[in-house]
Length: 257
Image 1 (cartoon, rainbow, N blue to C red):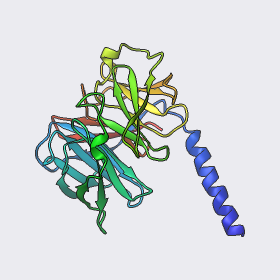
Image 2 (spheres, helix red, strand yellow; image 1 turned 90 degrees about the horizontal axis):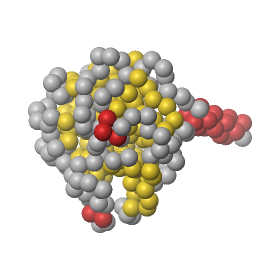
Image 3 (cartoon, helix red, strand yellow; image 1 turned 90 degrees about the vertical axis):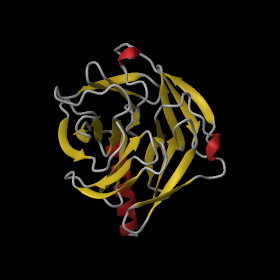
């Protein structure tokens, strides 16, 4: 009984701690990864798998572009191909698999083998019911709530992950910069209360954070030497914003929580 009680208390403490996390005033670069495979000008995102402690980086634009695993030291573990022309990619800890969306629509699941290597993507019966607001936008997901999100022109489109159908729109409010300054295709979801949604100001090199209702709450000034990006090339996982440098084909991870 004592062990069960302690376990419940630990889980409650962990949830409370995550809910209270706040952005750091001075983000620090602590991970750099150079893509090994060829092809693809735009990194789509980086995803952390807490079950094995590895990161997975994927390129947008073609099913044959790289999907690679690396560790916290930026060392390559495994290289393969994306297998789908992805516009969304995240880890589902409940199902122990990756999920994602594709260019112009559709969803898939990508299971892992015993070594944690991604296998061929599987499309379920209703996968093509997902139609993004525009063909290029990135999709992110709140697995716990079962919702997918796409950003477009000051609005977040919300989809039911189970049915792939659109649920509603969230109009973003009080953004401190012009929408023209914001990366038009990329966004991220943090899971942290009051800072759920993230966009990126490509002019001032700032992360812009919004709460679940779409109200701007805080910005994070990135270091002066971050890669210059215009679209895509943005990810968030394991408390870190990842920015992709197309010239060096490298992902740079900055701890912001």
